[in-house]
Image 1: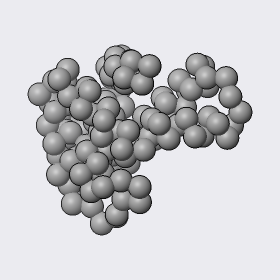
Image 2: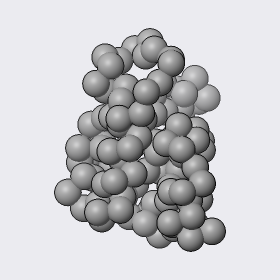
Image 3: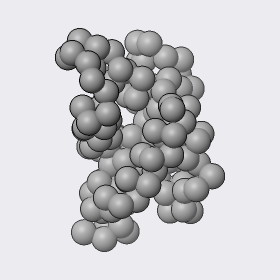
Image 4: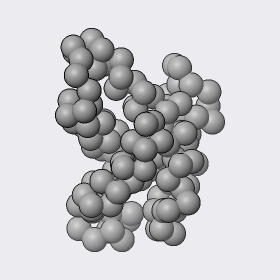
Length: 128
């Protein structure tokens, strides 16, 4: 499927749905390889990557390097009307996190693993 077909065939919440899983898996794999800890501590460290608050910060870090198409996906995701309410984030962070996850879904479905890896490296360098 081309990137244009992905944009045409999937709504922002669908992209965010799959992006949440793809990004979460990358974060967990990174932690398994780089942090020696028990499962409870790994779970807590995972929150540093996957919380709405963290994702909104990471989005700001990667925005300058995003292509126009990627920025458009983020904007669509950020502006989508959602019926769920954030538990541990304000509404602005929640919308930013949805845009962030939509981007990851877009990249995952377009099979652009190298781009995902490049952006994830920026995120890891933000934490380090």
